[in-house]
Length: 125
Image (cartoon, rainbow, N blue to C red):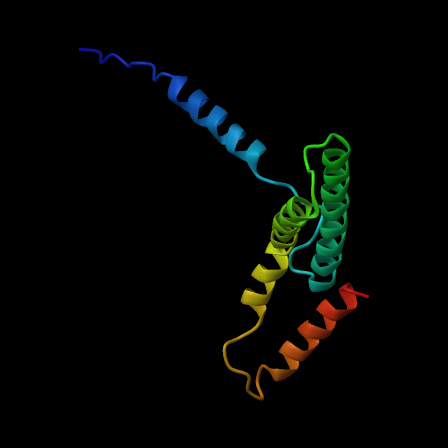
């Protein structure tokens, strides 16, 4: 008595492939090596500068369009928006600091911490 072989459906595998492709497309691609402290610091400066320029331009348009009518409104908005820019720009550096700086410094890691901090400093020059 011959046994019947049923063909497996390819639909589940196609769905898995489509979902995997969608996740892969959503993965952010950065042009900065997050393991390079100097590059991270330079990116932070660039992102902060671009964000500041954008927020000051928006504020200028709002003053011109009479959406902002006094110094108090302008100050409040700029303070809030510039804080957001700084916070967003420093995410990578904060993460790197958390990863690279140990809780306690001893003779075994003091040199590595010093080298790391000098590298970050170079990124800000």
